[in-house]
Length: 70
Image (cartoon, rainbow, N blue to C red; front, side, top):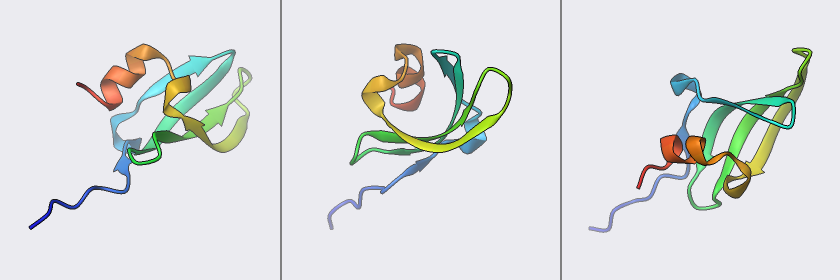
């Protein structure tokens, strides 16, 4: 029997946060097949920008190690 791959990995319970260019992101879910990440974005004033999908390559290296350890 073939092993079924997960379509997404839930990250909201791990409270993974990072900042890129004065915008704070909170990781919500990771899509391994698309190599992308759903995040909630907030600007430096604390105003929510909204939900965004960003490529895995655009997140900081330290966060990549937490999400997808090799």
